[in-house]
Length: 178
Image (tube, rainbow, N blue to C red):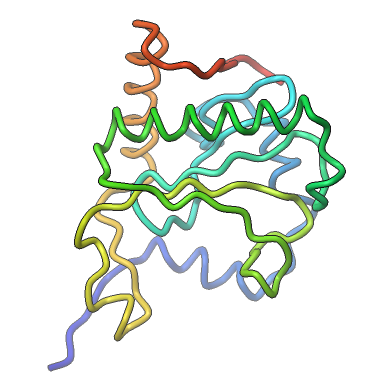
């Protein structure tokens, strides 16, 4: 049986894989405002969190230092602490918005380890649900993402307001301009 999966939003990813981007995506995003268009959720003094434009699952977030570096050893203690707090905040935010059963959290250091952007270190926070891996990624190398990035951003912003408003989250968050 041959079926079709229509996913026109993937064309941007397919086309971008052939092009060498100008500059660093994370440095660019660190300068952009916190808004749905930039997909930047929040920013602090040393780090920021954003949606992944090509997610593995709905709610796939990334945390990166504002300073450009690929070397974990080059990060200061203050940068590492804020990154860890932001990763924790992302987990709490995703729990509030999506109620996942678990998370994959990690860093890919170098292309051999799977880094798509290897010159600016960043952490992936990927919500997971029991049974979320089915035949699509195994047989067809296709992931089915049921919601748009715009809806995901809005849902996470609602959860962010709830968490920051009632003090249940432990992570400091800056929502202002860089």
